[in-house]
Image (tube, rainbow over all chains, first blue to last red; front, side, top):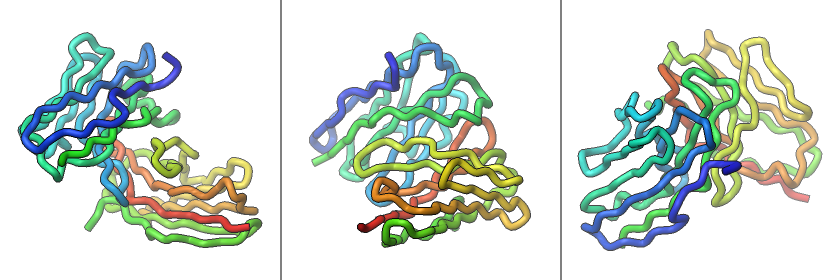
Length: 116
Length: 109
């Protein structure tokens, strides 16, 4: 596709449930990033993939959060036992290669997760 | 202390005004620097990269002072369409981007 695609665009779930958020990066982009943005804050880093492997997962807040990218393209962010504090916009971004800083990232439009 | 700090604003300015945003960062090993723009309920989009020599893109001028760990963005001749949140962004090791909380700009007619 032309841009980074995230599905669903909105997700409402009950506390304690499991959710999966999907990201489809720009074709050919090897690097993929997940960020989380709470109201009034800037995006907060969660995890970075280079190809299939997680190059940096230092931003994942706890072991309820997990992400995969099995074939080096689509990625899924998985959240177990959701809590109300997990409510935020989850943003995915991709870039063409590691260290390509001059083009920055291209972000998807995000998944707005609401835990009730 | 936050890694990237910005004045949250809001900055309310009339059309045609010049407005400046400032940002400081704490990690002296930071490698690259950017300004992103984010419209309400939209994703962030790259506005411009920031270099020590200063760089300009039309009405926008960005400046980096590595010694002071300070980044600035100047917008001249503000337009209504410039109303948005401006995010100061620092690239650390690898490809990790660290975002400030953003500065809100409202341009009024």
